[in-house]
Length: 89
Image (cartoon, rainbow, N blue to C red):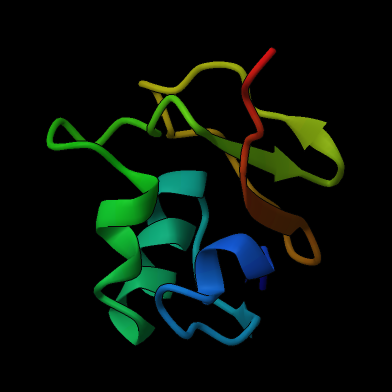
């Protein structure tokens, strides 16, 4: 099972403990995590189901660059980390 975790910058708004989820794609893994913390969905995804501009998703420390197509295959033991991306200048 993939492991999904949300960074503290997100969990301070919506409590969501790290969890192992039964999923074969990134989209499914996020959906299962949102089942445990429905309010997190609006922090991570926009109205079209795409990753928000100021959120970054990593699979095994590799950033997912396509914010729209989330049907990235996951394997047992993969680690998904969702963080709030920092911006500014």
